[in-house]
Image (tube, rainbow, N blue to C red; front, side):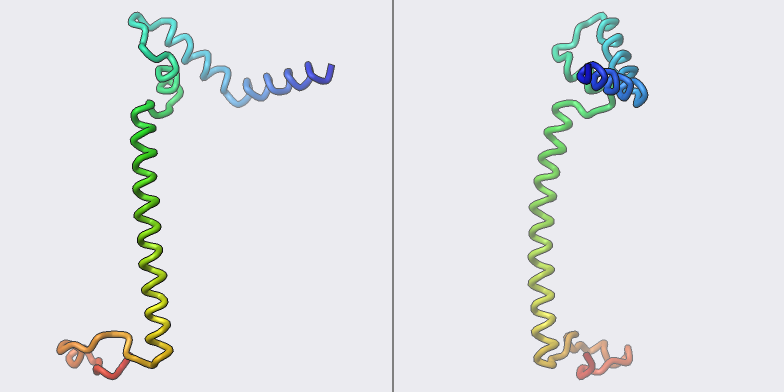
Length: 111
């Protein structure tokens, strides 16, 4: 009996959240399609608003590339912070001295 109540609660959840309606519409669209798609799963995914398999794979590759770039930037950031802390510790100037510093009101001795 408890199992039936659990099933009924889940069915109500699916209905109230709009899942049953969305799935029904996607299945009806597939049924009414004159030219059956080669991938019914991909057709339903597209009808539900999800990316196609090709789009999904492209996004996964892009995510992987971005993760690599993030790791590289994070490493560079950490290295730069360590270098900055070392320069501060030694009391060295943090900005390189240039000819333009004088007119900006900076001297080559200021950090």
